[in-house]
Amino acid sequence: MASLIYSFMLSTLILFGIQMAGAQLSSTFYSTSCPSALSTIKSAVTAAVSSEARMGASLLRLHFHDCFVNGCDASVLLDDTANFTGEKTALPNNNSLRGFEVIDNIKTTLEKNCPGVVSCADILTVAARDSVVALSGKSWTVPLGRRDSTTASLSAANTNIPGPNLDLSGLISSFSNKGFTAREMVALSGGHTIGSARCVVFRNRAHNETNIDASFATSLRSICPTSGGNNNLAALDVTTRDVFDNAYFTNLKSFKGLLHSDQELFKNGSADAIVNTYSANSATFFTDFGNAMVKMGNLSPLTGTNGQIRTNCRKTN
Image (cartoon, rainbow, N blue to C red; front, side, top):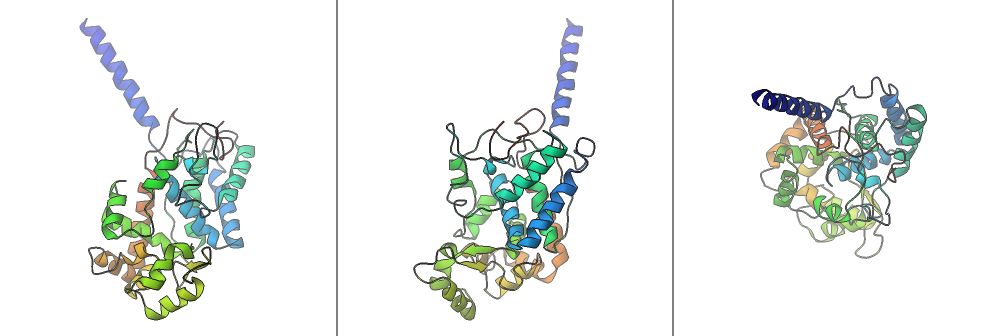
């Protein structure tokens, strides 16, 4: 009897060990199964960003909007089906998320070279990193081995993704719900040092808020009138829109944050000191951003035999 119990416990521990090992992400995950994976993604991202610098910010945002909804599982890429409504029409995503075609093109190439091996979730994660690098940011090592979800959640996309009108406490709470510290939240917000936002999300700030540089507000009002022009674009970083640097934080100190949620990071509050640090030291920002991106990429990934490796990122197999 004792030997049977011992055997059972041993087999359970072995099984548990296998499951734990399967759940670990690794930077060398594709080194044997698809050695060209990382170079293929990098080449495609570099070309896309070279063609349109804004695409770098769009690919970074795709990854963020994926991970904040039930983890980094490429659910954001799924089109609607008869069984579920995807996340593309959620309020934070509708007529806003971009870059799907870039991911499609990468997936098509990888399926030719390594059929059924590289997940859409990993493509998103690597593409986010490579987008930052393509816009002069610093690189970081991306753990790999994620698998793709077989469903999506419109409701979670509507509730989990922090919005542009949140105040500081709301931002801290939203990121805390995903396991991030306030410092990590500020670092990740620094992703707004690239890209643009639509008039509809900064109209109220441009016309009604007082903690905004007067000349900056005037320029925004010319782009975004009190009515109409909802899709007119303004740079999130008015200084160097297409360069991944720390100018976003310097702009906040000059009250030139584009979104309400941006300026909330520097408003005589608890985040001011972090903004000051990143504004004064770009190396510290780059390091903290890379570490926070790795942590974000580790949000509830599907590994082992969970999920699947989608052949087409827009639909399940």
